[in-house]
Image (cartoon, rainbow, N blue to C red; front, side):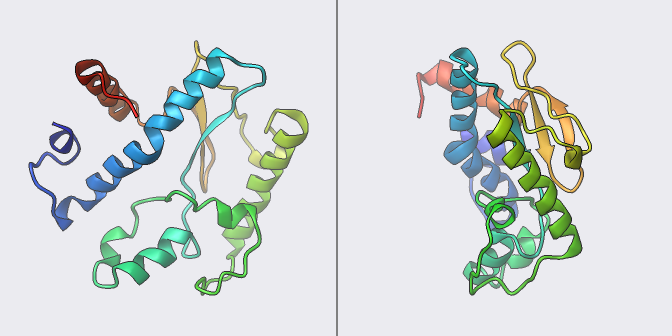
Length: 179
């Protein structure tokens, strides 16, 4: 049932790798993130600002690690989006020996925007700053929202991956399954 939902197939192959990565991402991160989000909003003592990190670059962790792990299949992963941990390259300076790419001008501009929002949030509990060029709405139970944090930041209503999260809610209800 789960594999069918994600891949429209009953078996795994390299042909369904993008859909399989969505499945793994949901199981390892997205479901728990939504559970945590709901908990924080229910017991809110501080404002909650949710985001979906989408910025990609040749210097991203996934752009470096996938070709090392799967050199014959690396091209298949190009354009699949940001991976878990990719944002760390834009938050912290690194001398990672495997990173052959220096930041581009776009990377540097994004880093300034991202770090300014991050530090503004640390100081004020609100990430909004001129560098974002958009308003990052506070996430609430009644009006869920998040910021797509990428080359172009985009305020978005709702939650990330709503169809997939609804699928997991039904799976949980049907099988009393939870992580």
